[in-house]
Structures are given as structure tokens and as C-alpha cells.
Amino acid sequence: MKNNKTLYNGPIFSLNQFEIEINDKTYKRDVLKHAPAVCIIVEKDNKFLLVKQLRYGIMKETLEVPAGLIDEAETPLDAANRELREETGFKAKKLDLFYSLYPVPAYCDEVVHFFYATDLIVDPLEQDEDEKIELVWYTFEEIKDELNKVNSLFNMKTIIAFQYYLLNIKK
Image (cartoon, rainbow, N blue to C red):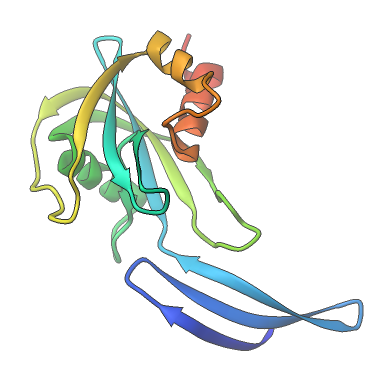
């Protein structure tokens, strides 16, 4: 990797460009440098808590598992606890990491850590001022119905979280 330069530097990601040599030819590559993130499946009384919010990339409301970025000096577990409290008003007595993945490694270095939260207690933190979040409880059957829709309102991390839940957590 050579001639690495930052083309854009923003609050959530930066866009870097570099050159790489493959088979004696030089190619330019663009990479989004993105903060790591967490997402949380929240289960209580056989229902799952999702957040509905407007996503500006598509200008549509989506249904998602609670999620957010990991702040500097925060562990994934600390971030999951904070995001859960900020977005839902709940704290989990039991919060387990069950998976980590790179959503789009072809052009982005973001890693997302997936957690499973149970044994909830009310313990809110102030919500981020630039977010407007609506909480929605779904049964797993309702989630499966939504997963089967071609134009689902779910984003990729939510689909992956519940597919993993279906295959590995639900007994």
C-alpha cells in the first residue's frame, strides 16, 4: 500500500485512497475508514425490541435492532450497554456478545459486534439529540414475516442478527 491519502474526513467515517500493486500493475483503491459499532437483540417476555428511525441514506424509516458506534476508549460491551440505555431506556442484566463481522470489507473497515440482551431493567440515558427513535415490540413470528418480505424495512445488521438468532440461539 502506497500513496495513502485522506480524501474526506468526517465525524463517522473518512474516505482514504491508496495505491496497491497487483501482478506488477498499480491500482487505486478507495476505503471508508469507519468507527466500529455494536448492535443488540433485545428480548423480553418472548418479544423483541426494535427501533424505528429515519435513515438518511435511503430517506426511509427502518426497523432495526438497537445499535450505535463504539466511542474512543470504549469496549464493545461498554458501547452495547450505553447504546441500549440511550436508544431503549433499558439496561440488561445479561448482555452477551455472540458474533462480530465486517459488513462490507471490499471498501470499508467497519466491524459490528452483535450482542444478545435479556433480564431488562428500566435505566435510561438521555437519547442522542440528533436521533428520533420509536420503540416497537415484535414477536418472533412477526419478525420472521417481515424477514420474508422482498422490501423489508430491516437493515442488513438486523437481518443477520435474527438469522443468527434463529440458527444458534433460539432453542
